[in-house]
View 1 (cartoon, rainbow, N blue to C red):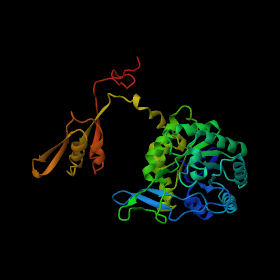
View 2: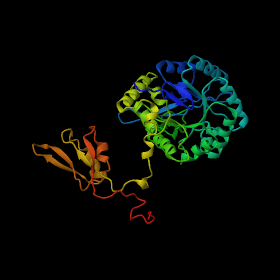
View 3: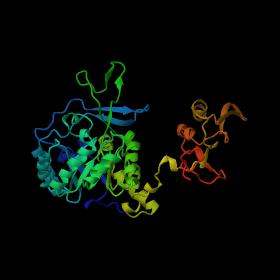
View 4: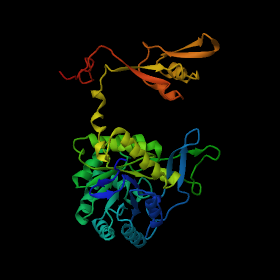
Length: 425
């Protein structure tokens, strides 16, 4: 079997799967159960100064697809509401009992150097492996000048990270907010201040929905509601993009990344690692399925690595980064055309409806010669632009495939194209 052991910032763990800072890591009881199940590490739920904040009720709401599957969870939970001393003692004991697991601590205190110095000293004394600066929480804490209020201002990120690097000897990971236009700006600020790594993404500001019977939100609190943090499978594409942009940018390419965002199985984890992540952090999948999902995650990743000949995580980490580019460098002479496998087609007509109504009228509809009550759908090659919409709408896996067509033209991108008035000469 492939070797899943990981060394991230010198922090060793038996596999790259860490629990993210969230309700599953709120106390020793949870973390012990996770480690017993096989998780490689955990980031303790965010600690702050005493007295701890008071949470509201209820805290979670859900966004589902039409079949009822959870796409994402919206939460308005704050940082730990347990006393600092209780958390510190549990962290200390947990690290003693589980020395082979990565144990980091998430932190959030006011933007005052004395506050950061005080909590860092206390946390480092527990023997934990590192700290994660929570600059991402989008609700509740920004109103107090913390969380995303810091993460959305690169100067604040650089200032606070600099304090933390000065006042602790353990690795400092900066957790970035996705609620920003350009993720490279906060990443660069963290790097400028000497951050050892970044983790991303934190949750996205969201409202999960409105109950149309009551015209109230799904997690109303005494008739009112607020925007919360959105996480789960639906945020994965956003997280992949932000991780990829940091990994491919020359100014931040050397910055280690702990990836977070919609990681639900081994396949998701492998994608983030291929984009340069050194570890992956999981929350929603564990909350929905329990800690024992780690068995499927580690087994699946090991088997896939074996099938590809990868002996260690590092052998495929970052392999997808060189292929990530700007739109302007894509080959405009590359062409694909859809093909419908008539042997697996169930004649549902979804490809026709999608293409006829909303795309390029490239699917023909004709009665089957031996069954006039059933329709055959085929692609009109000269009309197909290779947009993939028919493949996306088809309910049968691999029934519609995209076939590359040789146009006979050399590769050319927008920087070279005659239609570009600023093309490279």
